[in-house]
Image (cartoon, rainbow, N blue to C red; front, side, top):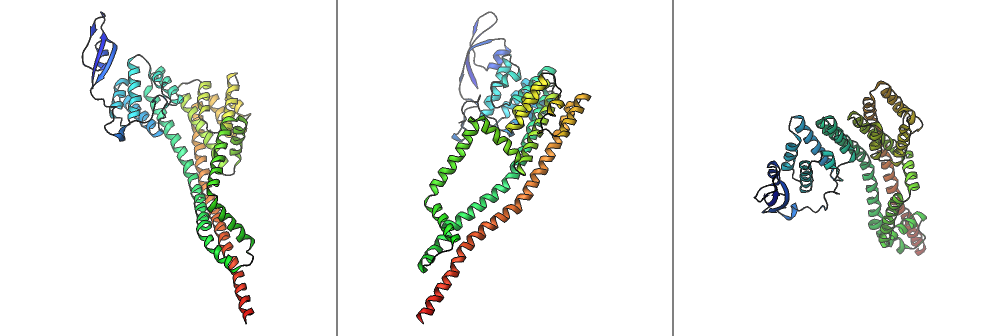
Length: 410
């Protein structure tokens, strides 16, 4: 890239050359005006490379991308490469245009005297917990370990979320299969029998009338059904965002759902313990670490309990005593935190509990999958059997009508 610029040297004399901003700073010049001429590596070469993501300061960064950045930065700094060169290597190797712009602006802020954590705060894509860990690494001179800790958090969080999604996808697939079977049978199969039934006259069984009515509803009023479903979903999401009591009630109800509730609670506690262990190991004060870990707990009710514990800790109550007041925290968690507080190894205790809760989450998700398979199989069987019976029952009436008419003719 080439630039035209106006800069001042130490004697306030203006200089004008064709060079890059980095070289200007190396020469001790203070940039007053910088205009790019020629092509830029950020300019897309085709429409498929255009960045349509909007403002990079508010743009979200995908977890996989965050993991890659944190991993690579940690490896380079552990190998002895300084921060400035590591950032430049990341910029040169980055393929994603938005991410390259983010890294470039961070690098420019570093040259302007900002710390890395200060530069990262300008971008919503970096979670506050990552920024706090990196800030602690800057303070204690262990920035390479901070990057590794951020990468570990991201990796564990992705793995936990993936397992939960995987466990819920199979039941969702079976439910979708049931819905497809019902639609095919009621919309395409059942109406073909309706004309035959009506041609013979006579009263149809109640089950058949009900299924034919349901078939007519799907055929003629499908658009209304879609509007109602979309309205219910939109209304639920809006109410959950605008009404705090409703949102809290829904969060409590989630924890009481059989099979699903334990997964939500265990995954929330696993995430909380994992983040707390990382933050305390990074040297972040307990109250700040708990506040950061609280904000990433997905369930609102568990988050409220963490806040209550934080309130007690800020007035001098120990963590295990504060947690003991709330049933959402397991007795074993309270005991392990007590051991960690008394031995000065709180981070290690929290890490062990995170491993335990993650193992419990794995076990619960597997149990959910194992239980849902026979349940959904039975549901599919009942639905299909109901539809088939509703089509077969009128046939017996048709035989009696045919037999009656033949005997009358004789």
